[in-house]
Image (cartoon, rainbow, N blue to C red; front, side, top):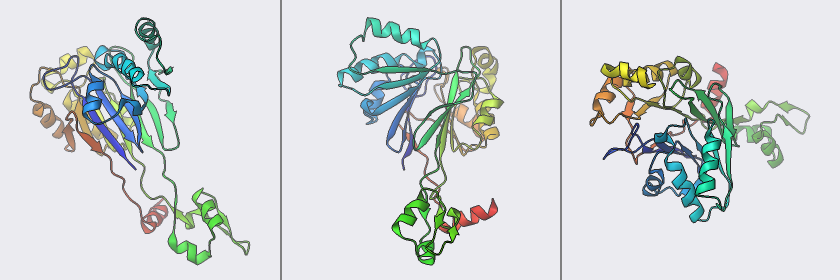
Length: 320
């Protein structure tokens, strides 16, 4: 039931002695996703113990170099490592032209297929889904077309209420039907509603990545209730004029977004190199949204499941 974010880079524009350009790795149920891919990302993957071969899909927010430059070296390395499965990349246009140029000059004989799908940065839409996860695009406000992402776990498989098995004398086939979400027909012809037989074992989890962007009330609303929100905080409030000019947010604005979204926790990053000590940004954000942390590169942030027992689920069903 893993849902873990590993921060690979947290600097804006350029690397520093302590920070690297933007990249996050996300592990959901042992499926690995890469969000942005700044310079040097592959090195940090190795240092964090994440094999690049495990990456199935890459999501790029926008086409500024500090979010993209690391991708092409990573693609070459994947070829050298013998990757055979396709690599899916979601990115705004004209990434197709950039990709074609790179493949033509440097990687014309990759042993795997690179698949690109365009992100419409103006639209909030479902980009990707499988049995356990869905990924939504979140329109952002930057100098170039940009989109953030909401990663939301799907409702987990149902558990059988143990007391219902004895009460109704359920057999194996009936239990399987109930776990599929079906009402169950008993031998005497009685139909038992599924809600009386099953419960959801834990609340589904979510993580949002909003960078690069000016403060956007719409983006905050689109990630309402998110468990873990990563929001860029490039500048401190005294530099808010520079933030507006360059299409970025202050730490206070990131906190304002978390507050509006009703987020469980806020991670701030994408720090300008003008701040050797990011505590000034953390303190600024905590004055508005206390549950704020500055990301630490190489650290992982787990979103732990909130478990439901059968009784808790019954109480929730009654409340609804």
